[in-house]
Structures are given as C-alpha cells and as structure tokens.
Image 1 (tube, rainbow, N blue to C red):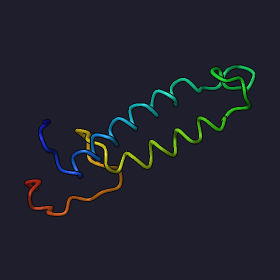
Image 2: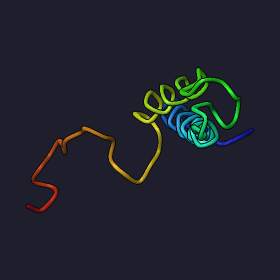
Image 3: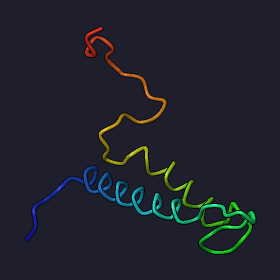
Length: 82
C-alpha cells in the first residue's frame, strides 16, 4: 500500500505535470517563415497551440513551482521584511 497523500497535493502534482506537458506543446507549435505552424502545418496560431496556452494558464494556478503565481499579492506583507 502506498503512502497516503492529500487530494490537494495530488491535484497540485497533476497540475504541475499538465503545465510541463502543455509547455512542451507550446514550444513545438511555433510559427515558420510562411505563417504556418512548424509542427502541424496549419495556419498559425493553430488550434493545438491555442488549447495548450489555455491549459498552461489554467493549471498554472495550482502547479507546484518555485515562483509565485502571476498577479498575486502577498497576503501578509509584513512577512516580506519591508
């Protein structure tokens, strides 16, 4: 039997994996000199790129990263030492 982990931690790990995967998709689907996607050949931005960007934005809220989430303020500003 495995070690129990809370649902919040499990979801945060899932979100981190989703962000990593969709960042790879974003990196692959870039524009070339003809205005098409290098990966799939469709008009850029292709549907896969749009979807991947949306997923990165969505799951970044819960992903386990070392940097603070974009647009968030410190709840207790006195902790920062300023």
